[in-house]
Length: 180
Image (cartoon, rainbow, N blue to C red):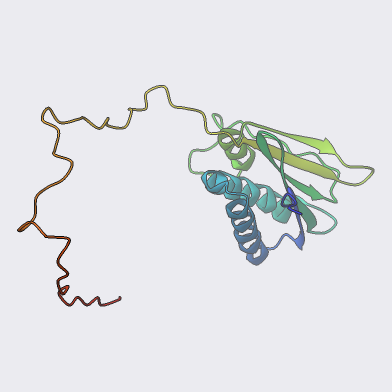
């Protein structure tokens, strides 16, 4: 019996910088397994930003759960932590152009189809984003070159060497093949 591969992956971790890289590799490997290689960069960037937010802002601890789920036509990536405070989205236009923080959720919004946050019980929240799994055809994509047929079609069989009399057996020349 053939069963479908799991469409759900969960990783529990403490959001420390060294762990964030490990989760990026896990997410990348899972997307390769699901044959969604085209989503790896955007999913890895999004999960990195969400885990960095947990590392920098979550209280009382840095424990969180990363979930990726393959739905019909989209990939859902979510990070659940134990801090009930909802994230504040910074206005990127008003931010200092040299600032090194405050752009994480804006980046998630830029690379994803949709994103959001919801409370998770009494003490926690889930921040999520989605990516479309279907590759939309590009309107300006060029068609691959068409194979043209020659004006003078080639002969089906070419004459090689002298004609052979099939009634008279001849020794075949020795042949060798080198493998590799």
